[in-house]
Length: 249
Image 1 (cartoon, rainbow, N blue to C red):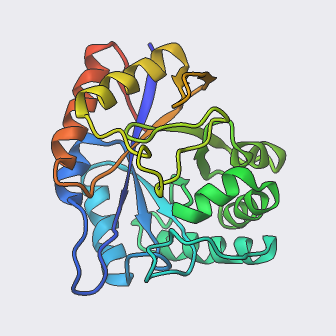
Image 2: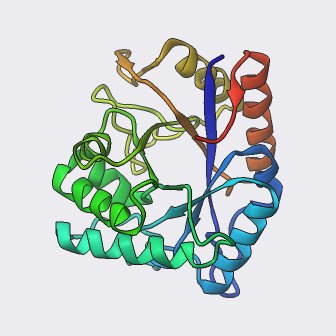
């Protein structure tokens, strides 16, 4: 049977500000990527989100980002391999401290860090080395076919290739930047159907009509939109209806 993981970025609240529908989304996903305080989240939010994920038997993952609370980690920054390694190691270690077991399951970089590393091998290598320094069994979640995957292979770190349910793709396999009008797939039915097709055909159609080959292990769904819960429910149900098992990596 074909298997797929459903992952969601969670724990993005900060102080008195609440973002996302974490509690409602968690029953329908199999992996949680929890913000570690650099782009979102704070120690109290991290502790509560880890506990909530563990209560739902969802695989715990760190979601390290650039030190950019104001920009939510979506602004590009100049960062060296050594800085990337240290920043990621720090964030992953911090989140692991809140787990009942003291261990995590996976790590998925956030926002600009993720997108920059998808194209920049040295940055991707720094991220992978930071993860490996904490726990060499942690799974790196990275954009399918990207430099993140290549770097993980080169440093002998487990990895999972990620696809996005609600993002459009360019012909090189990268995501259409959020600054462009067609970055998001806004129609729910289209996003659900396309996600199932991406898994079944191991490919996606880019915005210029070209086919891009993929080998997806995990699908990212977002939990911060007005229709987030219903959308995750629909994707979960559609995958099961297509005979695809939804399970953690």
